[in-house]
Length: 176
Length: 184
Image 1 (spheres, rainbow over the protein chains, first blue to last red):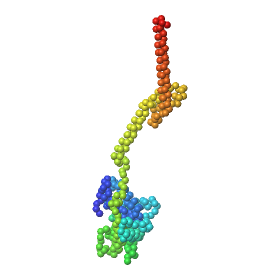
Image 2 (image 1 turned 90 degrees about the horizontal axis):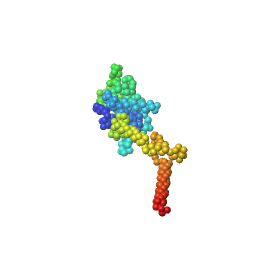
Image 3 (image 1 turned 180 degrees about the vertical axis):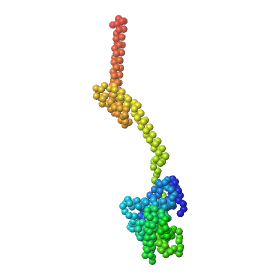
Image 4 (image 1 turned 60 degrees about the vertical axis):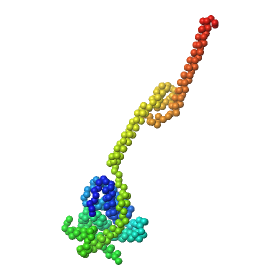
């Protein structure tokens, strides 16, 4: 990953930052909450918070990891406020239709992809999902993931292993 | 990092590596984990394909800084406050020196207290009266009109008295002249 641009009081550079990391932040949130609209709201909130805290930001680790920690905190804060566990909502995923101006074949393909992703994520417990998504989108080390969750390193490794095995089993079941 | 987890950590780092890893380099267990990882990342990549980062960047409304953080806005607010204070001070001084108020006061002072009409129409001679209270007063107008009429009447009657007196004195002077001439 390229070195992140510093967070200064510079809207243009911050916009570049949003474009560079927005996809990862949004992808993480969508995979965690399973609802497009909520993920988008949360992603905007992540960048607003990062903007507010830009004076306090220190470049320890990557900017993406920093943003994903904010995103992760937001997901669990919101879940705590609503007194619910972070779980995927299958009906919500069914509504994740692509934009109407897309080609019908492309729409069908995207719908199928999202359905498969929802099925894959459902194989994972919330904490397994969290570990794997932080690893993928944030490219966090396992030590950083353990710090973010927070849990001992051995626990983070265990969640990762079990999650990957669950996905491997799913792949074996769905293989033609 | 503790040694008991070193091998597991190394295995999982290879299994979840973003960089390509040749399957031949992996032991069977790590290869299985790697398959699960690749399946997940393929699906995530595909789901993120339609993501429009530019549109998202435009949607974000960055919070505006607080008022005290905006020097221009702060200066504007300060100037507006000073203007309001100056206007209030000017209004206060104008009200204090208002000739209408003074005239009302003097009229009220010269009116005999026993006259009910005067007490009814006397405007409050209060210097703290608001600007709205200084608006046109029909009672006062009527009172001034009456006073003007009364003055005109007095002046008119004295003028008439003066005329009569002058006619009388002229006639007396004419009689005196005739007596002196012996014609009367």
